[in-house]
Amino acid sequence: MVRRNISRRNLLKSGAAALAAIPVLVLSGRAFAGVNAALRASMKYQDKPQDGKSCAGCGQFIPGKPLGGCKIFPGDNEVSPQGWCVAWVAAPK
Image (cartoon, rainbow, N blue to C red):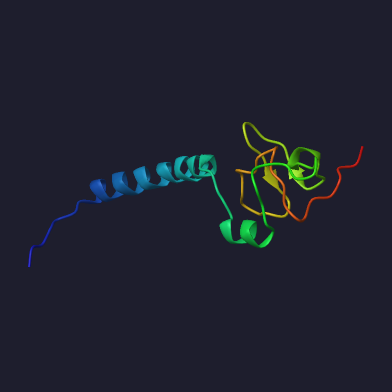
């Protein structure tokens, strides 16, 4: 068995580095795209409009750049403004 002597100073340095990394990891995690594939399938989502209806004209759509989100698909931030699903409802004017 190998025994390592860990000094208090090294332990504190490691702990401080870990604490400093937490906000960076949390913020960088928000930049990753998310797709809720199971919900998309159940709502018959497609990346093209249907009968002149698209996500950009839907009341559930949350605009973003370059893609948006949807109130129906929590955590999904890759919804195309040109897409469509069965939950489409006209946006209020």
